[in-house]
Length: 268
Image 1 (tube, rainbow, N blue to C red):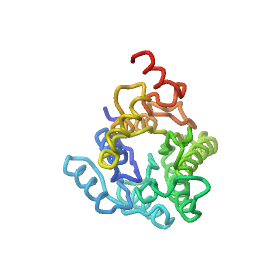
Image 2: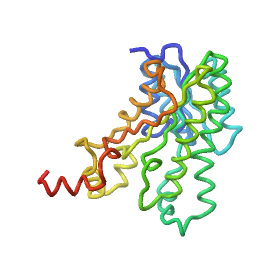
Image 3: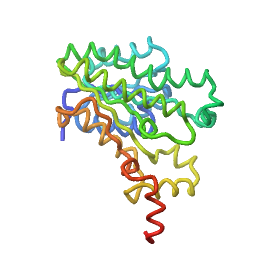
Image 4: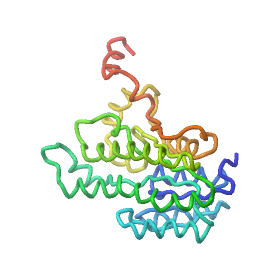
């Protein structure tokens, strides 16, 4: 398959689980990839691995809180590969220290709230702002934003994170509406629990099992499962799909909240 032959893809959060899996998949299907991440060493490692495997990739150290660095990221894509066809906005503020302090609304830290929105929403807005002109020059493109199941359904914690992800869903619709006639599509994916290396290292097995009870699949997602959805939405296979948010959550969001309890009662 060569769905991205001749295309240039910019992926933020490209050193992480979902981002690196997406970078590898798109590169394997012909894309020239800019691997962008706040973790510059991680971005360099992923880009070097792709290059060693015969693909075209360059790293970019990018703090998405800083507009000039986002602009420089897009300039890197222009300079190295001629422009941008695909933008995967995937960076997110979700370190254990941040998530551990995102608990109750009555305890919200205003500075944490502001920073989460600068990274999780404003970073996506600025990514689109600077990538869209290049896409217009190249006759169109696709933007895929990483939202979250927490942007569709609330949890007992993480109100800051969940609200920022809900805002991404609204922004996705606005980009799709404004630029659809100019051949730029914009969609979002809403992952559920994903077995990234950091999740496996930090989530106790009993907590993971509790989540698994509510999935309709007998397993949780691997980063490649999310990458597959991102690549589909970014490709011409999805040419008539725009403005939507695709849950990629093993059916977590489609059933009644009592599903797991009912299964236990039935002996399932």
